Image (cartoon, rainbow, N blue to C red; front, side):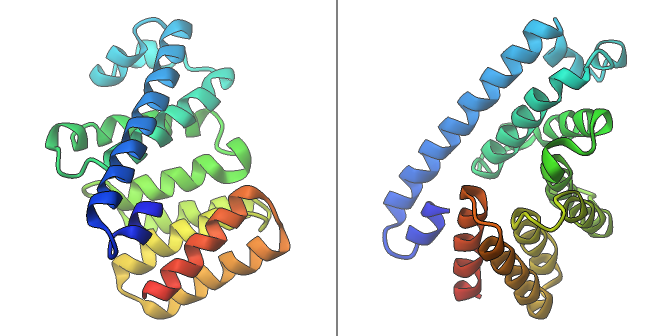
Length: 200
């Protein structure tokens, strides 16, 4: 987010921030994947080979690790779009998120469901209709107290549809929720929503 805001003023500084963020995402992914590997030996190789015998060993207690591994992987890939080898791992991150979601679709009040929406909207061959259903489910799971799925929905759906009306509407919802339910995540999402509106 900081890199995006800085882009028009100092492209080199923005690139440094992106590289640092990508590094942090990668470290987070490696930590989470190692923890999964300790609990389920051979897990990463099974993910690569889609070995269901091993993958089905993922239990409720592993869902948090799987979520963070998938989310950080997705973040890393989104900052590595110029590297085809890294982008090629997107299906693995999507499958990992799906494994976790199928085990516990309500994880963290809709955070995992929202991640599923983001992945669905960004993966090759993904469906915006399916992605929107994920975001709506995440909004319901958060009981309307999280701004995050509204911002994700606006960026993943409205921007791709090139629909400024719903883009503005959904970001407005995010801002109102963030004001009503104050916490760090909502404040960060409010700042992003305001910036996106200013840039549109």
